[in-house]
Length: 165
Image 1 (cartoon, rainbow, N blue to C red):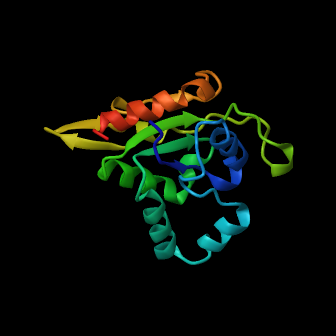
Image 2 (cartoon, helix red, strand yellow):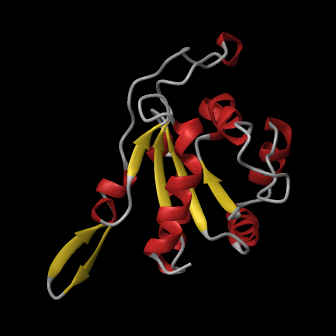
């Protein structure tokens, strides 16, 4: 069953990589709009409250957040907000490493990148006095090594079912 997903990623560094995922044949145009650099810069210039409202609106009809983990993803200010929001609102979460995906040289970033920090290894909640990390609930894959094109629908479905969606 097709699901609406929210892509969380480092726009400037990984836009080409994430575009390849979005154009792999799984997603329709009905999901989250994909912003070009000019549109994102315009939203960013409106201030934190407007950015937060935009993120909230984009996530409203989604059942899964896809954290596209590149080298600088977790340094991105809004990554933590998006992941926390997804967890608190009982959305499934899928981590996908994108660092080994080819990038265009014209972006000014390397063709292939260093592996970034998996945010699911750092987010936790406390239950019965024990820290439970999101990485013990939700899976993280490597787009290249784990054949993302063939498996992304299954990954999304598994994440959604883990939260009862």
